[in-house]
Image: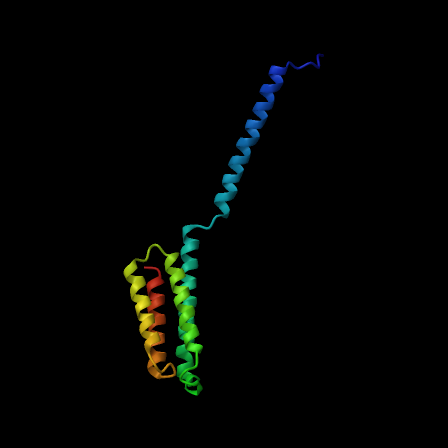
Amino acid sequence: MALYIPPARRRRRLIAAVAAALLVGLLGGAVIGRSTAPTVDDRVAAVRSDARAAAAGLRVIALHDEAGALSNQEPGDGGADVTLRQTRAALQEAFDRAPWLGGAQRAKLLSDLDKLGAIADKTSKEFGTAADALATEIETTFAPS
């Protein structure tokens, strides 16, 4: 039995083995990549969840108003202002990640947020009611159609 393998045959076998390994690696990588990548539904659900979290901050303001907790604060207290800034940042990020929503919807929500922030007495019932209404509007805008 001969142990000698001609160099041309050895080279062909090596090239075939490398090509097969490359093909298996590419196919395996593609399958693993596709199975672990977030789907469109996952990304949409994440945006909606973030929007609900932004609305939840406004609902906290409304709940504090109903409980009378805001009436104990000084008129210049910044708790509501902090919540409004956080809500604005969360909304802008959510809109950036939500291409299915148009510019008109973005402008309306941010305008309504500005109107809420313009209310002078952030301890009033009017402010709490407006915060709750804006929270509902945010949830409705980002909710599934």
